[in-house]
Image (tube, rainbow, N blue to C red; front, top):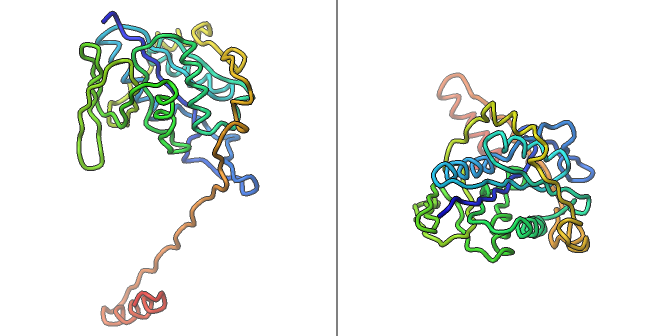
Amino acid sequence: MKGLRIIVTVKQVPDTADVKIDPKTNSLMREGIPSILNPEDKNAVEAALCLKQQHGGTIIAITMGPPQAEEVLGEVLAMGADQGVLLTDRAFAGSDTLITAFTLSRAIMKLGKYDLILCGRQAIDGDTAQVGPQLAGFLELPQVTYAEHISIEKGNAVVRRGLEDSTEWVRVKLPTLVTVTAAVNAPRYPMLYNVEAACDGSRIIIWGAQELKVPETMLGLNASPTGVKKIFEPERKKKGQIITGDPKDMTGILIDKLQELNML
């Protein structure tokens, strides 16, 4: 095999430790919240880089989002990817996972031939784990999920899957799509010379609905079959009471408290 052409899907997400919810719109308040490269997408990039080191080839990172999502492409280029593709257009706004996967699939078709598509298992702002499998469906590709190890052997991807109570090995013919978990590797830090190269804007191409030649009626919120009805923060549990004193007295107090809570 003469090098691999690998496509990695990445996403810019809010740092969920700082996320707040707008009580009026039931949506995430992203203003003023730092954005990061989705962690498991970073694992996917590292997996691509390791395969490139072994087999040679090219890595193309693709993301969909507002113009500032270009920042994560810069980070991926600094890690060692060769090219970035930013899908940004008002027509894409409000896409659910299905329409996101559809839009990504049309961009990947435009990119041409590839051997492998790598995705993070899920994004921390939605935790659906749907986009990777849906993308494989639109591209009519075999897929392997929950990958903890990937190797390429004689035109096949050999993948170790980490399941809840077992491990599974899968051999699948290329081209294929694989979603990875954080267990697959430890992502590298960007190298200085890659950071400098990432500043070259010519390595990132920007496409909108017009470049993808997709009618706007098939994109964004209006085309999405699902939507968020309500989003809320779970109630914080009240702190418990610490009982101190004589053990005999403590026992009586504890029994009284449990009876008050209808637990006895």
